[in-house]
Length: 531
Image (cartoon, rainbow, N blue to C red; front, side, top):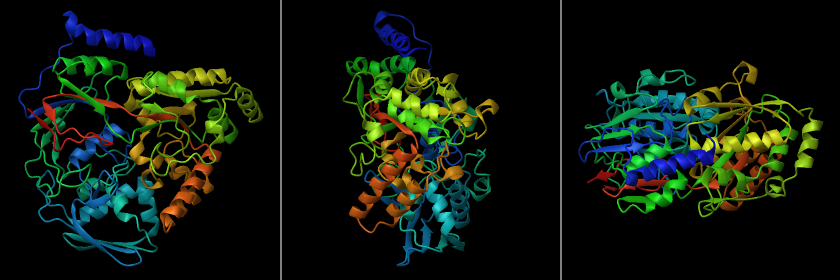
């Protein structure tokens, strides 16, 4: 559906509540211990190592825990670990688990489970790959203690093990962690505060998480992935529905919390005294025009630069977020707008006047005029659907032959992992967004990596980008970090690793009988209560 037609339908559905029209039947949650939550998209899997969709990560961190967990200041704090020891060279790391940790099947969490989980994660994650490249030995000392010996220093080990960005270092039983990191796990046994009810999972409709009665939270206050994850609910039901129906169901009390309400319905929701509306994550998000660097025409940097020269972020943001400029801004570089490391160094093409004549000249020089471009559009996520529609018009204006492929998020998520030519099931362009919390520095910024075949989907390759990232890791102080960030931004603009489509924040909305909802890069269910 075109966005305006979609919004008209959404508004009509929301207003139907006051007009006496019947809504589609949604079974009501019974009791104050059951929370009904509408996620941003369908939950197609639960493996936040093999799959990097945010909706997958959001579910996975309810089931599995991390050895360390980042808080709202991006500080890694002990989580499953009781603590650690590290030598002065940051090469020998010894970790000790908290006593009494148990997996959902009743088995104890052991050091061997941690080593197997780290090794699986390290294949897919940028920081994990850095650890794997340095790893000399991974040793079990006893049931609760293990050691990682590195050949060279890695001071950011704790952040790597505790970051929320996907792929996330989730600790699984050894038998599950042995799963090929490029294949989804089939068992959902973790040690986290919730258990996954596989029997009630209906992909595309419903997922159920139940309180883990054996979970022992830490004593510190809970904050993001750190501290005491105190669960006040017996059951969290994820109910998948389109945004129009979700807004109406929230007003009618049939759901309790909507992760990403339709922006154009927010004014209506704010008028309802029984609903609270607030920004979900202060760090916002960076919209993304992601190109496949392996396949023509975007394997030629001139064609990628043509996109950067002509993409109008205001068009994308107005289409995706509406006219409220309080929640979207021009993203003039690759790092999070408004964060300490934000820079526009080397971003003249991104911040200059749109130049279609110059862009068409570059495309012609690359021999790509009239080339076929397969554009993957996630049809069941309004944000990406809106951005995809704008891109269809942009690519057509630039003279490309656009193959517009609309599919659900699960299908797009699977297809974007294929390196094959588009004619054999691959792709040229897809749209997504990256949480601003993941883009404040290179450590958790998966989409910035330009390591070729080992990089994130699109597989960009740039030694200048990689050198800049390496210099940031080696930086001895904040000034050196800032210089490295500028160099990364310059190199990323030269390479056109991807093209930002704007910075934006997303509202979340919940019934006022729900308390404990916080701002975070993912929905935090521990500490949430329902009266």
